[in-house]
Image (cartoon, rainbow, N blue to C red):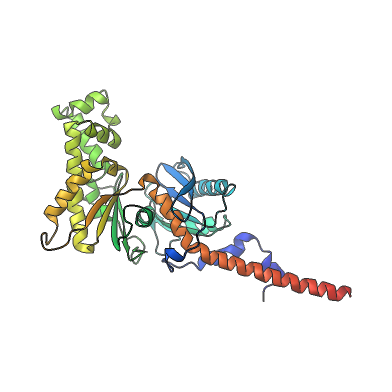
Length: 381
């Protein structure tokens, strides 16, 4: 039986058991999730973006701040998240918070096992934040949240089997099947960037050699351009002149900009990156056989300069080519906000259980108040 002490316990202690009951996968269709506003948080190596998102994927308000220095304690990042959520909650009726973290998240979607750009190592992020916020919290990998957003509101709508590839500093990815994010037994599925495509190739920060992301990513693009510029290659004169000889100023967005303006070397570099992208997609098609590949991340801004060569290479390297249907390859539509939108929408899947539990607590409290009032009336009679 509930006691008055149970009913008046601090909100954090009453909320925690509710959050722990949330399942490890989507247990109900997004179609039946409550149509309530939620907050999505996208945490990267350089920025934390937060936004209030409605049930149709519309962003009602967004905030952005720099990610605290990675040498600081995890609590500093958690403080930043809490401040953003509380700020948005002042102006919006927020029912849940979803977090897309750039790192490995365990199958229970509680702990960030490893984040390459933050000092999170086996960090119980969900439970820590749940103890500080008055709404349920969901944590997932940022590529998973971006893929969910593209499937719900963007380039992947209507697809039953979708693979998303995010091209940024490295390569991330996610798999969706029949409305479910496939996270794997331990929660770390989708690390496509670390498939080995060139035995003994370029060293990857992960410790291995020849990883896919060393040949098709923002880092690969910039590395190749800087090497040509440092060697004073004649084909690099255009970009050397643009950066006034400062090779360190060469960036991915600059290469894309110059390629659009017709710089031959930059166009060629994007073609090379695109061809390696197509090779990797063909490998994934052999393993997963999806109906659609969605290409997101900052490098995808090059659009057909990148995706055109990727489609060509995919067709050349696809096993069984000519005798099987080919998956569609398309650019993501939601841009850098996909992770935030997807995190918010996934959080709606846990909002209903929290609301039901909250309603039961209120009903218990009201019953107790009626009982207490009856006792008081009887004693005063």
